[in-house]
Image (cartoon, rainbow, N blue to C red):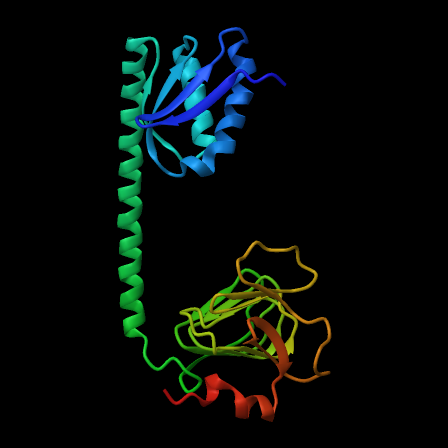
Length: 266
């Protein structure tokens, strides 16, 4: 296909040269292709865009800017065209958009700062999160129900499909776990989830996630899957992080004697 679009970097910014003959709609795919292929070269720079070779309307210039926004991480600070008045009008729009972007950025930073301060305050107030400090919940949790504990949690009942439990420490389900459980939610990777009958939909420990084999894949950066081979029959099991994955093990004397969470005195 004959190329009618060229872009090049210059000291003052980017020059986009467009041939006069083709219609603008025919040029637009080539413009997108050119900017996409050069996106890694330009990076996140703030640059001036100069359009040469043909006159463009305000609508066409807007489409060019939309393509640049979609295909690159560039910040266009000004657009120079053959029409000086159009350039000034486009500049007004860019200034307004940049002002809104900066305001949104400041708002997001303020929100994240506030959340971070709340989390730091929360973490500072949480002491002794270990196996010797646990909250007890009596009764089963049905679908749609949830329960949260700051330290470890003992459920005297079932956690049914559609129910969820979370804890800052470990979780002990003295019953059947078919719902979701999250242990060590404040970052304790030594925490674990134990159940007399372990058949969970999903388990999270710190920043690790494991899902049932019959569930659809989930897009998480750290994901483990339960082993298809079960270790014990009709006995309690525990899910803990081992070698970077959440694995199921028998909840027996060997586990209790060697469990870092239960034996950590700090």
